[in-house]
Image (cartoon, rainbow, N blue to C red; front, side, top):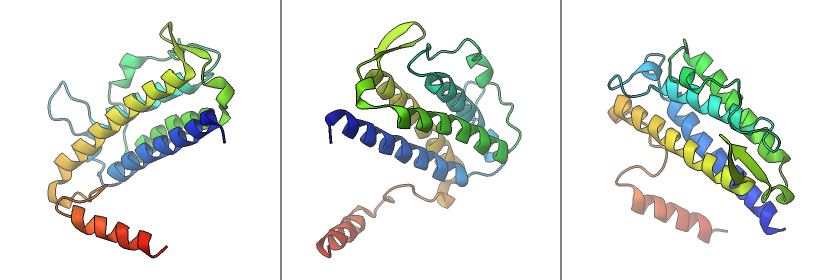
Length: 179
């Protein structure tokens, strides 16, 4: 396997992992929770999802041939909460992710050093992918943080629960030694 193809495989797995964190966080939230904001300057989970989806659709549509900031995208509108239900939120969430994964799966190592544009600024495909990973992970972190604040003790950890590191390590070591 070549370095470029390995990178594309690793980055797809990375996006799947980040999406999974978002899926698991959103699944713990109620209809009311998705609209909660701490103050007027903050964003609800619904707004964050709307923004992420709008960003992903814009960036990953016609990825190699058009600017990632599409003329029909209204970024400011993404920060107005118009999502009415959790079902609608999940539908919008999946639209963005489906566009991202479809485009990523079509890329080959020969594409990684090609130039793409985002708001008129040149990036290699590699840079554009890394930019998206950072942006998406940042917002998924916000969703997780909001979920933890809202659910408090009811929150189901998405990784190793506090105080369980040693127990987790032992489970991994035992699992690996039985192979």
